[in-house]
Image (tube, rainbow, N blue to C red; front, side, top):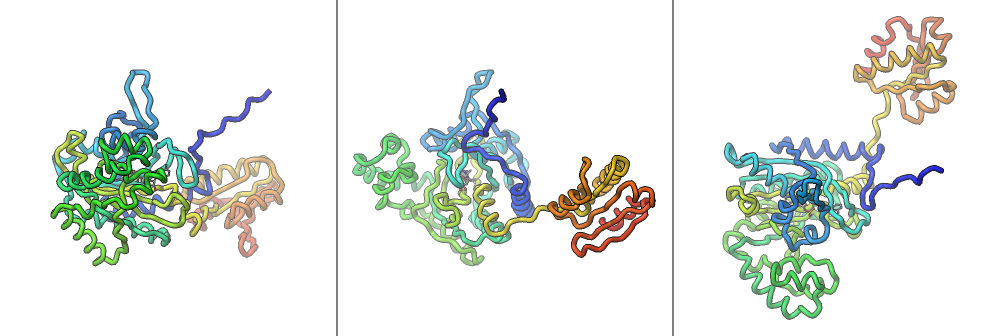
Length: 421
Ligand code: HAM
């Protein structure tokens, strides 16, 4: 008896031909834009030591507490599939002492991330991010540049239904005063807080602002906003960010309620939100993390970045502007074994010369092969059978206007290369 077929893991998905063309289009558009602005690609491992994520994203976050794919390997090392890219890029920046020659570095990376969240539309356990980071720039220009890049990328992809939400999360100077104000409210709300928030409220009160449990959200409705507690430096920084965005004509909303689900942020935090995705409204998120490089054992170097949810972006782009599959330029319809062997030689030579080529490898009627060429959207079909071989001429049929010409088999490959190149 045959075995039941194996299905993929819940929350994981295949990206199939038909979708991958769109993913490649998005990827190329992003890479072109990043490289114009001087970002260089970095590729970091899929797995890291668990404490890299625990120390950077924060022990009290949902990601670290509940969502990481963590296991002990055969050498007893505690490892985690990366839930995001920022921590790994910092680790790499520090480990390779990239700051020594020039602390200012701009990176991008694109790849899969892993979080064991409850799967639903737009939320997966393996998902992809398009990530960009700037190291070594304290000036608010970096903040503005990243928000502008997001806007430009979305415009180029014809994604219009988005809003940039920006907020400031302050710094170690202004946070203690804010935490104090928040703690008062949390103590009063303690009876209605979920068990996670009760535990977090003394250790990391700002995390309660990020809780998704309805009771906690309701209790936090009147919560103070850190933006009202900013120190002078943070306030000036935020004012320059918003003023410059306005000067450049980048639309945004100051969103006092915006908190991010990761602990490393300082000062500017932002999200690109959209109505196009139902419950999952954030298609990108990011912010400054000026203390992270230092806290991971590197020098005190400011940094800022963002990550786009690639799956979410692809879903939006697919709904508005589907990308066409590249059809073959030429389909070779061969009839009979001798003609097929010749056709295969021609096809490989043409393909190697950079011409989009397809053929039928088995014995099929001309009618079936013409149908196949049509289905694949081939521009032209070259027909060759025993009689064409004997006569020394093959037939080239234009699929759009249905005209046919004969071309001599002698020197046919050179002729076709000239025609299609
Ligand atoms: P994040 O907000 O956790 O930030 O994730 C960024 C984006 O990834 C989200 O806005 C969302 O579009 C997408 N995303 C997150 N989780 C899932 C999921 N389970 N399924 C599908 N898409 C998802 C970060 O990851 C930070 N590292 C961003 C950053 C870079 N901050 C500074 N530099």
